[in-house]
Length: 621
Ligand code: ADP
Image (tube, rainbow, N blue to C red; front, side, top):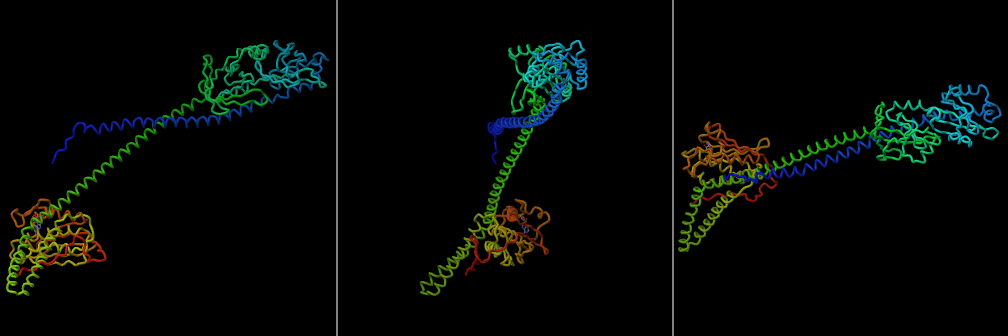
């Protein structure tokens, strides 16, 4: 056998192929992980933001409502002062400041919990005030420039957020015209503080701010945000504020809210950087970073309220989910790859096994055929003899016929010619049987009536049998059928009968061979028994071993190769059967062919292609 040598390039080929596959797979895997990561990020961020929007919206509604309620509480308060006769007399200039009016306003202010209450005349001068006895009292001040006065003097309700000019205190001014007989004679003002509300906001998780119509933050849960601006302010506006002293000349620095991404009509992602001066402030919520800003207008005012929900957590979560999705998908990808590799490996293995099986079968078929040829070799001497006898008879018959013709004995000549024809037929039958035996057989099983292959085998060995003087007894019913190939079964029977004849060789008389067949429990059993010496104990276990023989090479028929039983056992095994050898009860060897029983086609007499119907050779004259 030639040793398979691997050249170096051939050795590295699979490695190179594998590296190339890995080279292709790695980017694919990375791409998959990246894609999964991106999708994971988007989905998680989307879900997180939608949750945030929901809670933000909820908060906004809640805070806006409480602020509106707080303001509404004082809505009609200044107008009620118009019901006081003393107040009307004072502002109309009919009477001097009534004794006790200031004290009345002071008490009212205390009861209502407002910052201050005061009344102004038509010219905008403060005539009476709740803070009358304090050093920073408004009394006598000219507040005609204040927008809330202007509004009320024009007959409308005034609403104004501002920082007090005297005390610098921020508050919400509500003003009402004081009318008498349809004419406006003065203005009543109530200043309320919204600080309490503001303080309650500082404990929530998201900062809230209220900006007035000028975009100036007037209320905020972070104190330092107050009096910053949401939008940059131009110079004329700033000058106007300085004139009206609305914010009492506060610097109004920008808050620094940077819009990032608008995700809905009422929601925008913003970023807030933290100025150095805010560092010391302590809050329960973050004051810088990414926020989801949600804004709603406040009814009855020109203000807007904004809730800033911290969004960095959502982004952080989205990154974590993205990483998880990427790692998970990469892991799944690797698993899938491993599974695919394993499958391919198994597939390769299966293919190899199939190929090997095919090769083995071919090799076995060759072996069976070789065994058959060996049998033919062993038979050849006997067959030559078998043919020689009729040939000699033909010679004699033809000579006799010529003589009969010379003598004019046509009748005798015709009789001879008929015998010649018969002999030629029989010889033809023998050679064709030999040809049929020698042909390559198949291992595909089919239903076979076992009687015919047995007869054929005996016919092939006919000459040997007759010369040996061994009596053959065949007891095989015609209807016994097995699943096998007739030609191969014939080969097995030839081997067994030849072995029996070998075992009985040298015996003067009394040699006997019995062939029987029977069915039992779904199996068809054929037995070939002889009354020879039987199977010695040391031979029994090695009986079916290839090349095991006890026969000398010089024996009749070429001696033993030790393959007959090994090949026969292989043939029977191929058909799902078993060949066994044992010693018979009265000595001698008994070989049993055990095969699956078969049902014959409806016409059992039909001769199948390749089957041989054996004739009997006539005895020579
Ligand atoms: P071979 O006939 O070439 O020796 P086989 O495989 O047919 O090879 O048989 C192996 C051996 O089994 C024989 O050499 C013989 O010793 C033994 N054996 C086979 N058949 C019989 C039998 N009928 N009686 C006694 N021994 C037998």
